[in-house]
Length: 176
Image 1 (cartoon, helix red, strand yellow):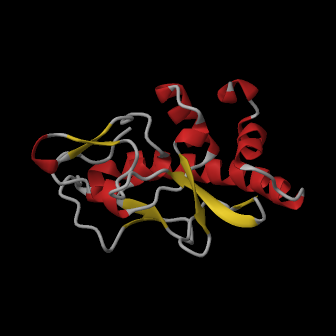
Image 2: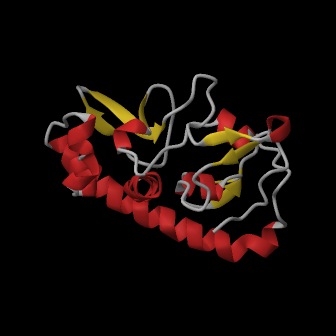
């Protein structure tokens, strides 16, 4: 599901934001790319960002799971096409936060347009309200699922990123 018509800008969303991941995102990206999650996940300190998704205790620190960035700070899945425009190589299976963009889930669980965003691909909000509602419900579901997993993980003392992936996804074959 896509709520905007991408391709009218130079990928500001892919360049300017850290994308927090939930378990569903990780599973979808792994299935789409065949990559080991460790190859596309980056740990972002809770001191450097804030996310609706829970933080996790890894190697004695709290982190958010985010998409890895390229050297130029673009998303790892952003690919340059003509005239410096970017395209997403996993579009259709991109993370929930990306699907929601240029909207965000607010602290009081509403969907609102990001105030700092001038997205040229945005459709009239009234035309996309139903799709936003579906995305909002999916994100709420994932946050609830992830909060319980993260709470149990953190309470147990945490561990390594590899151990966390096995714990969250419950599928050892992702790491073979």
